[in-house]
Length: 360
Image (cartoon, rainbow, N blue to C red; front, side, top):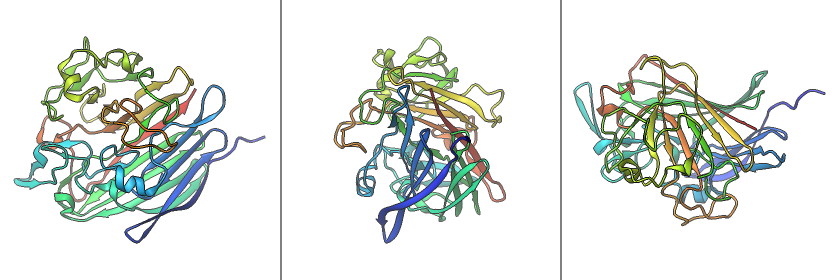
């Protein structure tokens, strides 16, 4: 008997600004089911089995489109963040001698593309299938000047559920004018199941011997600091809660972990697909392995989940009930010429890939 093959279906999920919003389901029966919205490119659910065989949704999110529209401003559950994911100091950068002022939406800084970033638009969708799996391609045109960014940008994000059960995310962008970009997905994971409580017992491994310390507004200082001897050393699998309450100035700045980790690559220009992170939940046995072509990952321990809203399963999310692992370029790179470049010019094509592998 042959193994079950990936399939793709869709259903209505409401409407936004007069446009229909669809929910696509990419699934392999009994192995993995992924729900993706055309609003914000949001990964709304990922259901995978634990050691007892039962499926559980392991990403945080909302049950309705209305909640995403009204409440996803701060958590950014599951969405595509851009044009520039993470923070830019003062919402300001200079490119080719011209200074650009972006929308300020995070203290004194710009965050995740501005007041209305990529997460707050309905994307065009097309679907495909092959021997390699099923794919949902989302695309949109970001006009010149959107949220203050220069250049008209054509963006595509393709979610592929492979025949082997991996969820692959491929990003592609072109522009007609020099600009900057930093694209990622902002899913929160709790491998015990969303709404089950804290992730502090989850064991995390990051293939990074350095990280970027930040100031009190979460902007990198410019230093690539060693993790050795600090609460940021996850080179070996370590419970997230083991050092999260240490008296360390960087833990204080982030109210926990909210920092970019620098992958151990052979050179700053290397963009091969490498292992980036391992996450393990001892209680369910579930594991997540992440591979990426990006130079870093933002590890965020859900510090600002305050219990003010309920998630997909009807339970309220509190601090530390989920964690994000956002594969990315470094925060504030446009103002840090020594960081890997986030500049995209006409005639160039930006591409990156991140693979999520759920297993036992």
